[in-house]
Image 1 (cartoon, rainbow, N blue to C red):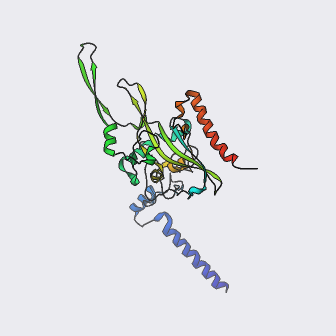
Image 2: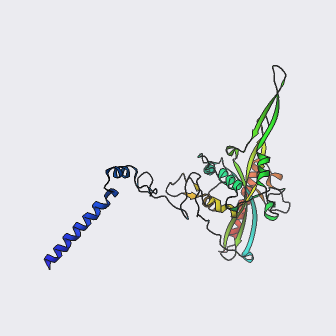
Image 3: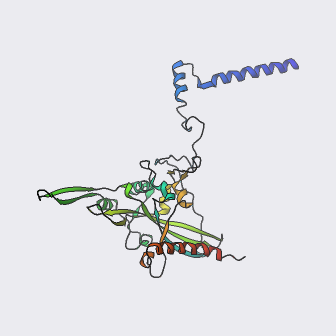
Amino acid sequence: MQKRFLTLLAFFTLSTCSVWAQNDGDQTGDPAADATTASTGPASDDRFLGGMGVYKRALHGTIEQNGTATTGVRPLEYDFVRQSDIYWQKRIWRVIDFREKMNLPFIYPKPGAKFFEIIHRAAMTSEEGLKMYSTGENDDQFLSKGLYLDTAAFKTAFNGSDTSYIPDPNTGEIDTAVIVRKIDAEKVTKMRVIEDWFFDDESSTMQVRILGICPLYPMYTSSGQFVGEIPMYWLYYPDLRKVLTKYEVYNSRNDAKPMSWDDVMENRFFSSYIYKESNVYDRRISDYANGLDALLEGERIKQDIMDKEQFLWSY
């Protein structure tokens, strides 16, 4: 019995060593091929970063960083909320300024990775069936009338050339200068957001749903003087989520926990200020308050929403 046990043990040891020898370094028997494999690593497996064995984290699939999208990634669906369960609701208009410290990921310096570049590229190519809506007279007109904005008409309005006549101070002759108009992503530093805050009676929670996003483009005179910002187009956010989920955001606080743009918007990892709330006069805060008073009025509206949720509970 002891002899049989020693025989089996020896056989198992020899078999294990043989397997290790065959798999060590993926040797093929060809010295040239083995040298190439040892220097470059497995060609079919690019999941490792820096050879440290750290896998790329996938969010609902594999998401590439720095502005490169991937297919097969879908956003998480919202919970169904019945109209009869909405106890209270308020529509809010916000402005997100990319230049604020918390919003710096929106202007990530990598080419093609800025938030505006992602949504503008998707709008121009109708990615995921995304459509542009006209800004109209009111900020939320696109939600009710659904005025589509033609891509060709938009390009004609924002791209093209202007002719400027500049007098020569020495000769007095008029020189002609052609100024080419082209959308510059570096100039886009703000965007508007429409959202609905509501209290769900079934879950007894205050929830928010973003409805639309509108980038603002700065306008300058021929002398370079800033004259204001104009809304470019509205994008219906539930449709835009399909695009934002495919792009990863640089997380400056933790490289091991990257997020998609949909995560940033849904978890509200951004700073903003309120410039309008739903009211009987349909007016903005700037119509009755300016400067610091306007900012304080926006903070008052935000605090009223938070207090509304607290006051609905009895202790």
